[in-house]
Amino acid sequence: MKIAVNTRLLLKNKLEGIGWFTCESLKRITQAHPEHTFYFIFDRPFDNSFIFSDNIVPIITFPQARHPYLWYIYFEYSIPYVLNKIKPDIFLSPDGWLSLKTTIPQIPVIHDLNFEHQPEFLKPIVYKYFTKYFPQFARKSLRIATVSEFSKQDIHELYQIPLDHIDVVYNGSHADFVPLSIDEQIKVRVKYAGGCEYFLFVSAIHKRKNLSNILRAFDAFKTETGSDIKFVVVGTQAGMQGDIQTVYNQMKFKDEVYFLGHLSSKVLSEVTASALALVYTSLFEGFGIPIVEAFNAETAVITSNVTSMPEVAGDAALLVNPLEVNEIKEAMAKLAADEIFRQSLIDKGRIQRSKFSWQQTADKLWNCVETAMQNL
Image (cartoon, rainbow, N blue to C red):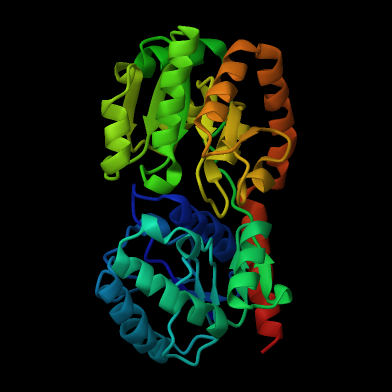
C-alpha cells in the first residue's frame, strides 16, 4: 500500500502538540509496517531525523503553508499535484487539513474545533478559513481520527458526522517525562525559581490558555498566604499582549513569576517533575498533553472542568472552573497546604497515565487507516 502523509509540522526543535502527535505516531507506524511505502510531504527542507525508516520517501513541495492564503494554495494546488504524481492509496493528514481537489481517499486527524466555540481568540481571516473549510474537510474524509471522546462528540454534533465514522486516538507523553529524586528537584528549583517551590504553566501563551486568570489567582494566593512559592511559565511568549500583559503588569507579585520561554522536552520534563503542581486551566482543549506529562513526571495537576480536560484527568487532578479566579486560587492553596492530598493525586495519576502512550496512539491511528481502507 502507498500512503501519502502531510508532514508539514515536522519541524526540528519546534515540535508542539500536533507536531509531537505526528512525529511519535508516524515513527512507530512506519517502523512497524515495512511492507508499506510512506510518502512524507513537507512544505520546506526537512531534517533527516524525521525519516524514521527505509520505507519513507520524502517529498518537498511549496509554498510554506503558514497563512490562510498559503494554506489554500498548498492544499488545493500543491498537494493535489503531488498526490496525482504519487497515486497513493490514501492521504493521511495528522494536522486535520485536507484537499478538496483530489479524489484520493483522505483521513484527517481533527484535534479539536475550538475555533467554532471561541472565534474571539482568532484573527478574522483565520476564523473564516477554519469555519469555511474544516466542515468540508470533515465531509470529504473517508474516516476521521480525533484525540478525545469530547472532540468526537463535538465533530459529530457540529458537522453531522456519524459517530461510527470517527475514531478516538488519544495523545501520549514524551519518554523524557519521569519523576526526579528530591535532590534533583532541588537543583532544578535553584536554577529556575530561586530555590523555591513553584506552580507551573506550560503552553504557548494565548488567550485560550487562560494565563490572565491564572496570574490573577496566583497574585491572590500570594496575598492571602504570604507563601514564598513562585510561578514558572514555560512557552513561547508571542501572545504576551493585551489582557494578559495588562494583568501581568498590574500584579503585586509579578517579580515572582519566571518566564522560561520554549524548552527542550528534556529540560521541560525536569521543570515539570520539580513543580509543586501544574496549573493547566485552559478554556478549551481537544486533549491537553501537559496533563499526561505531569502524570508521568509524578507532579500534581490543577486543570479545568470543561471540554476534554476532565476526560484526560479522570480523578487524578483537582478540577476547577477556569473562569473563576477564586477557584483556581483555592486549588493552589489546597495543594500548597495539604501534602497528603497532593500525594493522593500523584498516586491516582500513576493509574490514569496508563491510558495514554504514543504506542497506543500509533496502534489506534493505524487501526483507523486499516478500517478506512477496508471500507473502500
